[in-house]
Every structure is written in C-alpha cells, then in structure tokens.
Length: 532
Ligand code: AMP
Image 1: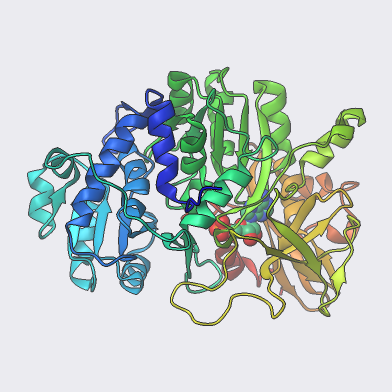
Image 2: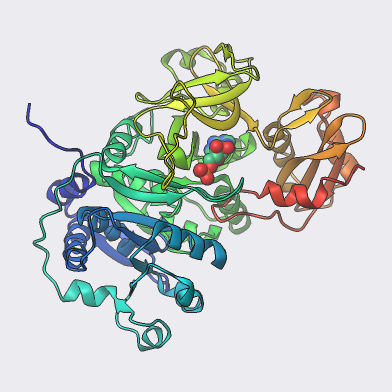
C-alpha cells in the first residue's frame, strides 16, 4: 500500500478538492455575518502558512491564537500546522496572569488575536517574554496599531502573498496543536496533539455512532475553538465537507437562534450551560429552530430534564458525550444499540442519560480504591481510566509520564460501566460528597434540582459536617418563588433520605469558568462551612 503520513493538512486538502463550494458562515467579532467556502479557507490557510514560513520559525515552534470561533481562526487551524508549527489555542476568558503564564511557558513566538482582545494585550505586552509578532485578525486598523507595538494585520498578510504554498512535510507524530487544561484543579497543564492523533480522533469519533456529521449537515460550532479544538469538530467538518456556522463571541440564546435559522443548522455542539441559555430564550421568545435535529452535549453532565424538554418541545435530540482536554477530547458518545428498539421509552430515556460508549480506539476500565479492577456491571463505581491513540502520554514540557505504571490515564472521574459498555459519570473525584463513608453523587442531586420548574441552574457541593464528615448542600438559581423546604421535599422519593441536601442556598447566578462549567471550587470556598 502507498505510504501516507496522517496529517491535519490532508483534511483541508480534501475539503478544498471535493467540497470547495460548501458554505461556511461566520459571525465576526464586530458583528454581522460573512460567508466563505472550504476552498477559500484552504487558499487563505496556504497564504498564512507561506507568511509563517518566512518568519524564521523552527519546526514545532508555537504560534498562539487568542480568538473566538470565526473563519479566520478556522484558517489558522490549518495554516499553522501546515507551516510545521504548533497551533496553541488560548482562551480569551483567561485572567491576565494566567494568560501571561501560559504564553510564556509555551514560548509562543507569534500571536494571532481577535481585535476585542487589543486592550488587554496592550496591558500585558511588556510581560510577554517570547511573543515577537502580534497579528490582529482584521483589516488595517490605526487604533489597534497605536496600541500594540509592531502589530501586523491578518488581511494585509493574506493580500500580500500567494496561495501556492506546499504544506511542510512532517512525520505524522509531529506536534500540531497545544491546548492547556482549564486549571480548575491546579496549575493549567499543556496537552500536545499530534497530526496522527488528530486524524485518528477525526476518523474514529465521527462515525455514525459518534459525532455522526455528514456533508449534508450544517454544524453550529458553539463549543469554542480554544477548548480542546472545539472537540475536534473543525477537522470532522473538513473531513466530510459539512457546512459550518461559526458564532464568534456571541453565544447568548437569541444570537444562537438567529444563526441557526439563518444557516439552516442541522447539528450543533456545546456545553449544557449554552443549551440552558438557548432553551430559556426559545421559551421566552416563542421562536422555533426547525432545522436543528440533534446536538452533542458534553463538557459537564447533561441534565435529563434538558434532554426531555428539547425533545418534546423542539424536536431536537440532545446526545450526551464525554471527554477531556487530555483525550482530544472524545471518550464516549451516547448512541443506542439495535436491541434498545424494544425498550420502553422510559428505559431508553434512562440509557440516554449516561455519558455513552467509547468509539473504536478508546479503551476504558474502572479501578477501585485499593487499585483493583472493577467489573462492568453497571453498579460498581470507581475511578475511570482510559487509553488510546488520542490520549495524553505526558504533559507539555514535563519528562515524566502522565500514566499509571501499566499505561492507563487516570481521568479523575468516578464512574460505572454497564455490561453493554455504557459509561456513567457519578462525579469528579474531587467533587463527590462523602457522607459517613458513603458517596453521594453531586451530578444526581443537580439533575433533580434542575428538573424543578422553578430552578434554572444548580450545583451540589460538599459542606463540612461534625458527625458525617461531609453533607450535601445545594446552591441554586431560581426563576420563580420557591422555598428551601419545597426544594428539599422535591428530593423525597427521588433519592434516599440521607442523600437529600441539608441546605438549599439561593444565589443570583452560579460562578461559571472560562469553558462554561460551574466553578464548584469557588462555591466550596464560599459555602463549605455553612453547616458548622
Ligand atoms: P476539560 O478537560 O476541561 O474538558 O474537562 C474534562 C472534565 O469535564 C471531565 O474529566 C469530566 O469531569 C467533565 N465532563 C466532561 N464531559 C462530561 C459529561 N458529559 N458529564 C459529566 N462530566 C463531564
């Protein structure tokens, strides 16, 4: 057989050659909308790669992006690895200190940025030790030029060069992307994806039982391109030639409804917080999203009530997925088996709440507290460990392995796996509540609370307790008058009495982290003494 290296650029080559006219709609940072095609994205990517090639960067040098989901960012996804560099995606919602730390540690030499980041970059520019060129993702703009020393403009680079660049030839194990973990449990750590791991993830995770994206779809990519490469969806879209809708920085419910209807979006990806916002806007405005048929939801547990409401009111199928930055990210997606056809709707709903089954290539096991391997019986709960060709081996700039001595990556998620391979997350090991030696799942308590008609969002945390060690406390956001007692009563018959939260605290909003997840560490800092 012919010997081809697996490379990220082969994906855009395919999209250009066979899906060149396919449309991509992008909402720029300044608002409005622009449309492009896969052919145009490929041409611009080659122009930027040519420019990068002339910057004197070593192979594997880091080139940063501080940007939202737009077509220019999409072009960089192929331009940077195509020039032999590593595309380091940075989260614009990071605190300045974290941003500076990550940029300096990764030694990014060039930084492409969206123009709404100009002022904060101007403020930290003097603290950046490695960046030598800043590229604003826009046309010429004198105001930006006056704020950032030596800034150049993306559209000038495109205009000044030609698109005949031949992608840099690389070993398939060469690094292509760098993404830092969100750092909610400590210092953010870099994870490097290779060309090979990216292509294998693309092929394995876009099967019909995975992301299931096809050339007939328009994908609304809500999940940010700085969060695990938007779950690998740009590569899957290029691989099959799907249309794309890129929402830019505006992820509120009404902006998303507008974009879905304008682009006839059929498929979407995002974290539960986003879909809670979309649902609220749909219910409030009475608008419809008729083209949307399904959405993969992950990054945090998907509340069953959200699945039911989207299905029953809007005919949208929410599909639960699970993964991590360390896993490129897809580990499981919840799709049915043939014999599930014979199950009752209630049983099917219950199965759909699990995080799902692994695709080919992903292996998983459960490990108990004493290191013993637990059975896949749907009952045993243990720490979930994974392995596969798109799972981290060691973190960026660390020599030591990130794996167990027998070669598995410990996810830190407490899970069970049923005999059919469906994995269910009960908690993060650091979040789970241990009351009198028994575990209480915060995910389960939150799912029940969110199903209450007067609760819009909720987080369960462990509070210190004299007798039991820890007891559950629910921190909730309400949309209508409801009392603490009523919420506690709502738990009766849904969980064992000893699992009902001792207290329900109402707040105006939950603290949400930079990737859209609830910051439980912040809630614990505020409320963990409430029972003592
Ligand atoms: P990140 O690396 O920021 O994507 O975070 C990964 C972590 O998010 C996982 O280890 C889980 O704890 C959590 N997570 C991701 N998807 C899900 C899901 N579907 N249900 C519950 N937790 C999830």
